[in-house]
Length: 300
Ligand code: PDD
Image 1 (cartoon, rainbow, N blue to C red):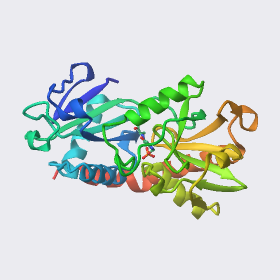
Image 2 (image 1 turned 135 degrees about the vertical axis):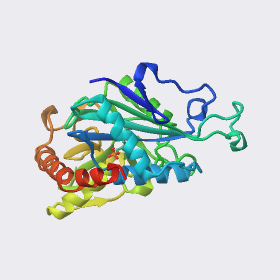
Image 3 (image 1 turned 60 degrees about the horizontal axis):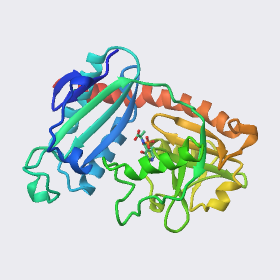
């Protein structure tokens, strides 16, 4: 299995993929992206990822010049070239190259650059995390909305570095009101006073696809989750905490600020949920996403 890149329709080994130095994604983080995982060679949750890519691009005034089927066929061709096994797929769209290294959109005269990276998937499902509530705040929604999955991830890069300095494996970032938002690349759920809760979208978070699936799954299985503001004090007295993302599915949190939760292992409700939710996702892939993907990528 190889690491491959599809750059504007051409598939090359990752080490040979090149982006021009005037590309605005490289110069300014002027790009949007999605991370998708496959099950048996087919992306999970593609319709949701495509919709979020469209929303992110609209937020950046970036006009996507390819339609969904064209992008899906590029992904399918790259996956086919990479061979069997499960893959990590990163789709990046930059605003393309300008005439000069000038931030003004008037200089952004080139077409968007479309990159698809395909790598063997490193299994991270259920991977445990040790969290630290850090001093750096989540970007304010009025400055750079965390709901936009842009190539400017420095808020998360520096947040994660701060957490690692504190001996943790990931960060909890607060917003300017002192409420919990999310981790560096995952959403957060907590069991507080016996009830699941998760920060609301307007706290300044990415609208995670796994988060939305979990909200639906839990409410349909008699364990509704409240979307509400959570303070750092409340989080510190949570019985259980877990992270959710495409790559982790659901990652139990074993420590918060150096303190072990439930003896330093995963919480019992989290472990039980991980098992049921993983089964649910596999079934959803078989019944829903895989057939839709095949229809979308069938040659017209
Ligand atoms: N990250 N919050 C942030 C800041 C994220 O970057 C991500 C995804 C999530 C979870 O979203 P989803 O469930 O749709 O994957 C929450 C991906 C995995 C990444 O950047 O690698």
